[in-house]
Image (tube, rainbow, N blue to C red; front, side, top):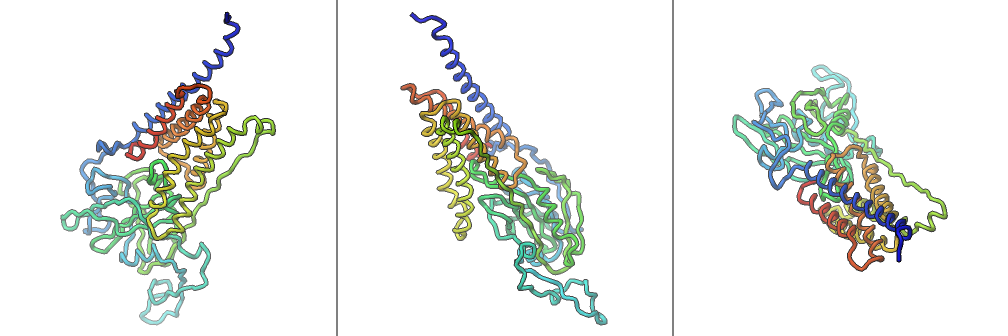
Length: 425
């Protein structure tokens, strides 16, 4: 006959473990729910800050009117980021200023009667410097691809939706980059630019924009004080989006495009080594679980970037496809397999620690310091789901039926993967 004293401690331990994973499951549901609620609900057509009557601006007096935003569709309801730079001058020269990769230097010539002074920009007074090889001397922009975005203009009262004239980026498609979409004035007097910083999100399978103001300031600074720039101003377009204040940079070229310098910031991820020999011996399986999850997630990012560079002739999405499958299938499989035979509490801890460190290190390496709240909640849900799968693996060796934490974790992981694919994160 069992007494309360015989079963009490064991019951309390089991009750404590159950309460822990149930609490984790509740937080998982709350995190996913919060992330979805904060999303834009694309399939339902609900827009946050849906614009009313479009407000047009005139970059040039009595010239083409511009709606100072981009749109994911040929409609005002699809509004996305605001135009934040306008280059004035010949559109071909503006394109050269943004894409020329040769280092150029000015050549001073004696001033003759009827000739402009030595500070005047002129095409015949530029020569190529073949010795320029440093990153400070050579532009780092290259042609890019991204989701299609449209701009709206009105010429003589006639409205027109324009596709982007070209795209450029500094960085990598499957990593972190500064991204430019340029829209050339039909009258050829200016080029509107939307520049932002973004990174490839392996869960959303698309880019997440982390800001526009820093990229705008960096590009703006590169043109200030240059001899081929007449003036740099700020103009109140009142088109605040993301972290923009609605003041657009206006850059007036003097006539000839010169390359500017973009210095990329490369973040550094740091690894932490600890634990005593005794702890390593006792928890080596759980530590291996965290280390493998860290390695898989990190490898997906860097293999994607390497693949993009090696297979530069194909779309980066073809490189991303097999890596995405490895992420979606491999991460929960590893959590379950290495979770078996582990202590449930430590399996949950190291699964979350390993994958969480990989996610944070990934953002650090890309220089990302600000994320939308919905993305933060989604990543929390991802960590909890993987932790519960690891707990389920640990419990699977102790019971015949499918452990409840495994079911909750698997459902949470599935929702965490599907919700971003349909645009709900």
